[in-house]
Image: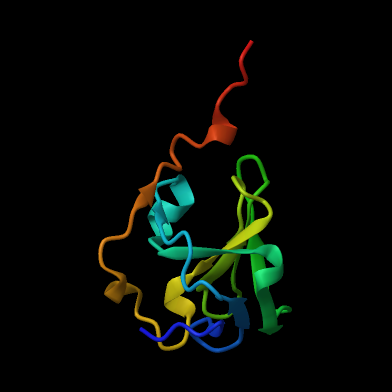
Length: 128
């Protein structure tokens, strides 16, 4: 797997293109078992907000938010592929769909840890 310091990603139809800065390779690779992630099944990596740039098709991206309306999930409005989202647990980061990266097969990553999104800390009641 050839991870470049700046790697290009695309949706399925090519309407959306983005770049991610990966100077340390793929970081925080995981799946999540929250209601949306378990349905989309994506393997994601993470970068600071400044580390992901949409270079084509920003006008094609659709935004989906639910529950606390904090996380911002983006997908191509043409082909429907999830590309990235601004995280609720770490709003200073984007998670991105590793399967969208050119030349990367997410299936080659082997065993990928699953984070506990069902019991997300932001869903817990604050102490009384």
